[in-house]
Image (tube, rainbow, N blue to C red; front, top):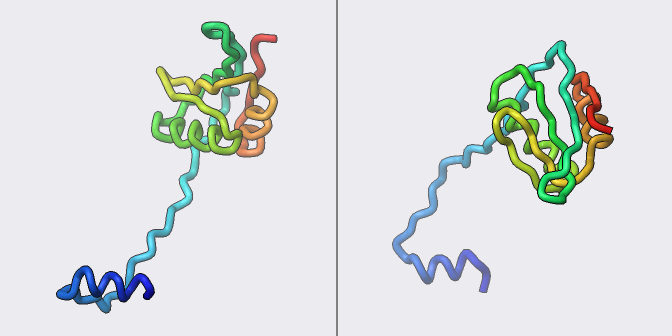
Length: 111
């Protein structure tokens, strides 16, 4: 017994629609590329290593999109607070490589 038959038994009055389903195409979001470099620094907070990215001049929504992309590419945790991306762990080199590949200028601060 396949899924369609089981659904017909559970919902006998249901009529399937013949309309084509709308396929959602995710639009590519273009980030604001700035002239000033973004600052990528290392700090220890409560004994844990953190990488902080600051200095983005575009909108907060674009910065949140960038934060999510960095977190997923590196498979790490992090947050967006007060105009800064806070990543768990010391990933300065990898983050700087990701940002320069996207066309951002970066500056390493703190060690």
